[in-house]
Amino acid sequence: MIRVKELSVRLGGREVLDGVDVDVSRGEWLAVVGPNGAGKSTLLKAVMGVLAHRGEVVLDDRRGSGLKPRERARLVAYAPQTPALPPDMTVFDYALLGRTPYIPYFGRESRRDREIIAGVLARLGLTGFAARRVGELSGGERQRVVLARALAQQAPVLLLDEPTTALDLGHQQQVLELVDRLRTADGLTVITTLHDLTLAGQYADTLLLLAGGRSVARGRPAEVLTGALVGEHFDARVMIEPGPGGRPVVHLVRGET
Image (cartoon, rainbow, N blue to C red; front, side, top):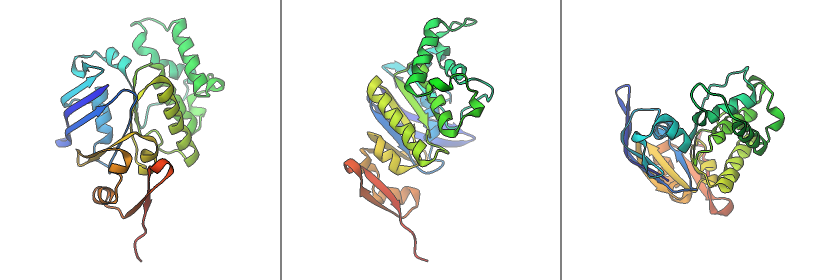
């Protein structure tokens, strides 16, 4: 579904990504992890086509460099870490922005577009919020609205940059469980960046560990979240033990005082 080969990005005179290779199969959930500044968000932006890059990005057997923006938006939906949320816009109208790739230039949304938005809001438990202004929502509600806009694109690939940022524990779980259910129901291919290693290990099929702009490990969660790799690349003392289903749980170990 997605193939990235020798992807490199240079920003401000610095090589932020350097020769990264990624393959993600249809229906797979890949979590990109790594320390701050590793290039996680940059990788998603490059795949989405909003950053200039070297190397190759192939989406559903189509070269990304040959896709027009509207064509790419029909293949890939992207939810940034800090999206611009117009506070006076209603939830329905914000989600409707996701239909932009299908609405003719200088045209208006169709009845079908509005039906799709109504269906997406219903699936996310947002029907009762349709007329609410975005600025009136809680953090968890806003995250669902951002997800609604992305799902409205009906793209087979979903890129989520830190979807649990600034959410409390319960809302983190709700968002990730929701993404997992939608992935299963719709056959979505999902790529997320996540700071929380335990969450990444619990939900993703595969992890990609970036450090210094390079790929240093890729595999099943238990293969990537090892004491040696986490200790080396995060400069942290950790204890890792199997959790539900044998998936790794990462604990910080307090230093001696």
